[in-house]
Image (cartoon, rainbow, N blue to C red; front, side, top):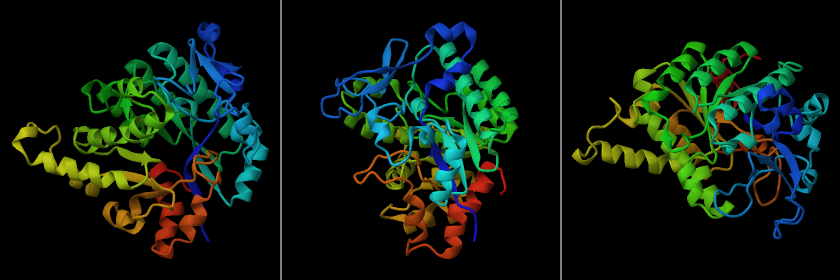
Length: 373
């Protein structure tokens, strides 16, 4: 027997979080608003956030996105867990739900902030501070069961460095980044002081799928194109930054995890990087070693959800000690709308040994996130 750790769980943000917003920004506080039946094809998606005059999620048109916060929508109310559980506004009910799913520990990531919510860097920093403050206070009510990832405002370097230090003091288990900072790749040297602060704090960096790249999302005219071309594919940009952009040369002790991206994309990205690195066309290559060397020799991790068609091959490529189990609780993306099926899929997987499963479902996450249960 061992503990089951959901290495990538989520919260559906709600209005109480923004009670922690700095006083100077209260007049710009995000508002949970009704949009009625504006989304004709999905009428249950009837509530959104209004932030700086823009709708998040933006469910149609350019710069689109789709997710289930705020949990006041009819869509959220139809989920098999309550809005109070989705938002962890009732911690006792949330723990009861974890028990029913046989999940011992969750590491919590945002939902709203998977899409940049403002292009004002100082307001973004204030929103992230509010989120971190609320989540730290909430997780402190059940510190053995609830772990959390801090948001850091990479568009404002001084604020990002300060927030790394504050988040560490508040008890964060990791810091979350999207795959780019707007239109800027993560290996841009302006971010080096932030990576130094993260390395000094001994916190892992978690790159989560999201609507990261402003330019790509401005080109996407629907949630469909935004999900495929930005939410998913922007992860290739982050992989390049860490395996080919030189970050791990300058900060070799960093841990980095790639969350909720599946497995198949890694092969194509590695193949193209390995190919171009050997050609004079791509000179001068930003990193000192080959992408495969960083993958094998540095602390690079990936989450799985158990339904990947090439799971055994993937585990052999990245190493069984670098794979984390992810339930994505309480998100519901897929056809049957099931929640937290990941652990059943991994536990029953015929290509994984019992020793593999113990690492993936428990021990690897303890090592990656620097906690023990």
